[in-house]
Length: 138
Ligand SMILES: [Zn+2]
Image 1 (cartoon, rainbow, N blue to C red):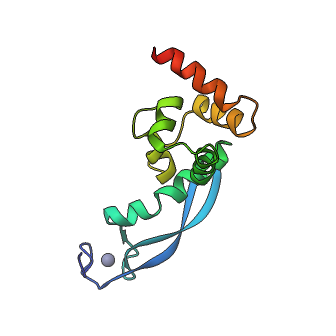
Image 2 (cartoon, protein in one colour; image 1 turned 120 degrees about the vertical axis):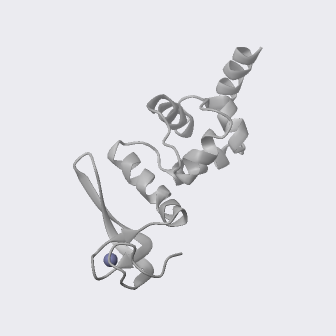
């Protein structure tokens, strides 16, 4: 980790500061850790700094788009006691889809989101979904 700013040579401070994010005309403030330079105002993000806000950024975009958040997806999956792998088999999106959705690394598409909501509200029951899914596989 560099201790001096690569741009101006001043000392860098690693800490969390508020960062404004914008998405489709909506703004939010999140807490962002980074190496900050108070001389030139530059912020340097390590991969782990970026990763630490991945979920907050994804959840902010989801709220703007009226999609389920990471925690809401996890809650639905836990309600029906299915693993991330089982959820991926049922809802599609690839074997790691649900681990990515729940970490905020990827955002579920609208059809997956809709099906999850129908299941959560018990408009479609899990038993029916399992049956349909098994028929697709055979
Ligand atoms: Zn600087």
